[in-house]
Image (tube, rainbow, N blue to C red; front, side, top):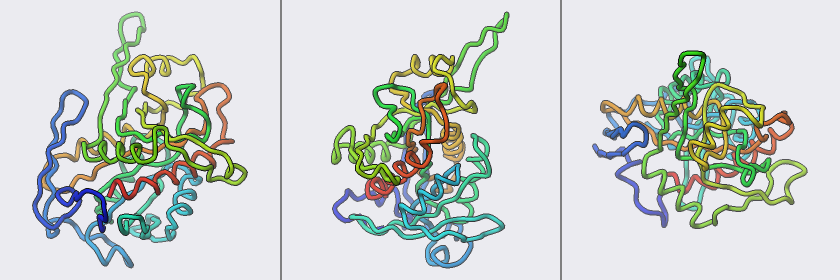
Amino acid sequence: MSKGNFPDNSGIVNLGGTNKLDNNVVGHATQVNNHWASPSSVPSPAGTGLAEKQQSWDIGLVTILSKEMQAVTDQLDLSTGKRLDGLFFATGEVTTDSGTVTVAATQTHSPGQRSVMSALDHLRRHFAPRMWVLVGIGGGLHPEYARIGNVIVSTRVVYYESRKIKAGGQVQPRGEERQAPARIVHAVNAYFTDRGEPAQIRGQARGHRKRTFEVFPGLIGSGEAVIADQDSEIRGFLTGYNDKVLAVDMESGGLSQYWQENSVGEAPNPDWVVVRGISDNADQQKNDDGHDLAARNAAHVVRELLPYLC
């Protein structure tokens, strides 16, 4: 895509040459090398339309719930119904201040870490995106930031399922933390520099358009549990692990794991970011009432982020 007035990131997103980027990943002091290969080594996306016109799309976007997918297709004006190998995708071109961004989106088979990894693989096989975006709803943990409808933009994920079972049934949590590539951290920082921290957005759902909501950078806690207890051990562990863990979901850990495990070899490895709208406070009052507002606010923030990410 055209970069406009934004810094030239051609060494990262332009597949016109063989470029190499070294990223330091938080989590077990791992150093990852991403090798961006020439276009000849990138598989041509299958299908028709835009997929036939280019070898690599800008954004591969994943949602979990139907409300999240509806919010994404509305906010980004994507066309639905593209069917490849029995899978359904929404695709389109999004015009931003810095150029046109191509987006391919899909919904996972089901919630959870494993299903999101399959969805990422489907997008990679058919569209070879340069960037992963996981977008949708999440539960808020921190009372200062967790107002329903607020949005968390995360470049760091804490996977909380790892644990050690000791004698007598005592459980010792062992969190695993991973960070997005440095380029994406800088891009998210630039977004908040331009728009303020917290950034301000208008509500994107019917009945909320005159209300103002806030967008914060922060960490996401991720695991397989649906948390609906103010006093849960998981909440206590995450807030004690880092007080900037602002929300929880069930998929970000799978995204960060997929990225890390594919950071080898010569194939391109997309960057990633997570955007979660707060739909509940992960407590006893948890319900579905805030899903549409949270999903639409999160999709709106993705739209705002595109010129920074691409």
